[in-house]
Image 1 (spheres, rainbow, N blue to C red):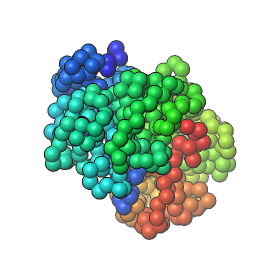
Image 2 (cartoon, rainbow, N blue to C red):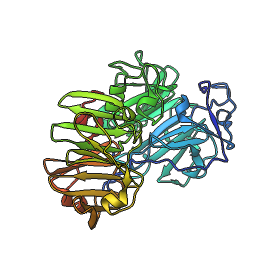
Image 3 (spheres, rainbow, N blue to C red):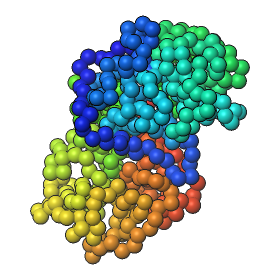
Length: 447
């Protein structure tokens, strides 16, 4: 498999900043939701990692063709490129063996499976390189690995293009789908048998991902959603992967910005609602406004020019948007155009009695704003501009955004949102959590 041209390489002297994953689920919710060319298979010598040594970092926003994609045990997507790894939907590349020790070669394909009928053999993260397979639990390589693919996956060809897990509710039997050229190999876990198919309507996959119950075939820096049984691709595909699976500052000329903001899997920075039934969601440089089924998207700078982009939290109080970014509070009028109030921005300490940055904030039908900062929720009296009560949050390790509607609280964690009857139920975590899809259920994305 070949890299697309124009890959931007960054000097390794730049800090290897860990990826900002933002996909970690609730504390008590577990397991929720390589194409380097070997022996001439794709024209590269095995182990060269597409020309990227450890002296350079690839940039995912330059249209890279990923070698493999899978999720980890927490549901966090991992994108492999050469001997590098991108975690989540934003953040820098890092060497793959920082997360997967003993992995010293680029990989061809990957999948993560938690097989209910097998407590050991087919559970974990599987990474394929040439004729070998590595199996990890967490970040630990299992004893006896790497081993030859033929031992655990008899009949599956070497030098794969992609792999994806397919549980029995989708494929009839717990299976793994392997891709090589035009061949689609369904490997049935229970019987260890293979069934070779051709999905005529699908492009050749260079990597594949099962995410939030959907199946995605990546080909270059494009992707298509497909039916794992038939290979049928419905809808307007292919689409640009950087629009939906990565957080990049610029987009292609053909990008539908409304669809991107509705359907992107990149976590939201902030969400708030007003009394007129509008829901505002902020992500990177853009925001989304939804009213009933009508959806509008635009750059943050066009409506809130002083804050520009990348807000930390937003809530509406006293008919004004209160936008928190770093240590500053910005206050905009909610009606008649979003105009910055004179004297703003002001220090967050002056406005709310605490220091930034914060993760999220929401306010219900009173004067108390609730600010989420790390593992705690701080209640702030907006009339006295002082923080009053601090509660530890037991429901989540990390919250990306939160908002209040009719007294009920919605917390957004990665690609899911969770509903609570009030702020106290949110922090105590006493109610069983039911995850909902942000893109589909909150913003009406149809794919």
